Image 1 (cartoon, rainbow, N blue to C red):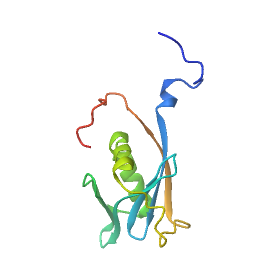
Image 2: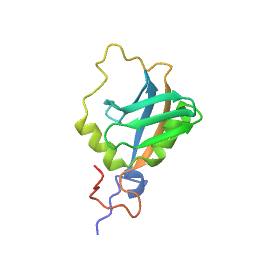
Image 3: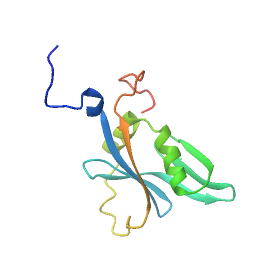
Image 4: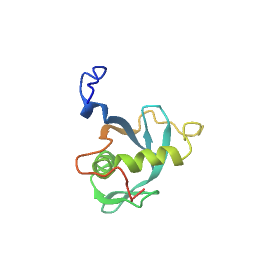
Length: 125
């Protein structure tokens, strides 16, 4: 097998993809390395804490302390293959004139394209 010296960090680093998640205007947004911004679903405060519900796969969380905790909970469960598919399927939200992410709750995460044990085919997409 040929060795690829153009990637000195190795194959594992090449599989790492950065994303930024935001909570703003009652919605969860995600931005990829190409700067495309998409709307993933709802986030809201309710009596038991913060809750979220993603539109594409109905992933949900409830009773979370704050928006940042909700984003971290979602990010810990989200799968790269599903999220990557959303960037293909969902329109870019960057053109929304009413959307201002300055000051919004945000987290930066890195997702592995194919975590150990995950198959190339993702049936949840």
